Image: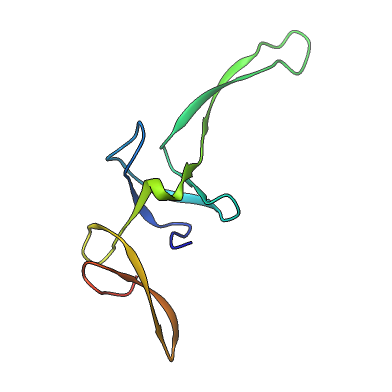
Length: 101
């Protein structure tokens, strides 16, 4: 997966299309990412103790990785990501400006 935790991403599909956010968590096995303040949902929480009221809790829902694009920190544009293998290791590369990420 080419997107990692703490990357800035642009949402390309869904109700939050066009918004930007920071990746909080990556779920590699299901190809999903959790983005800060994106794809929020309300969930009812049942009262756990007697006399306590139930609550509505707002939670983050994961997005599929195909619905986000990485924002290059060098050029500031949403771009596809490639890899460059050198003697120093394997690096992610912005397809627009060809700079290492």
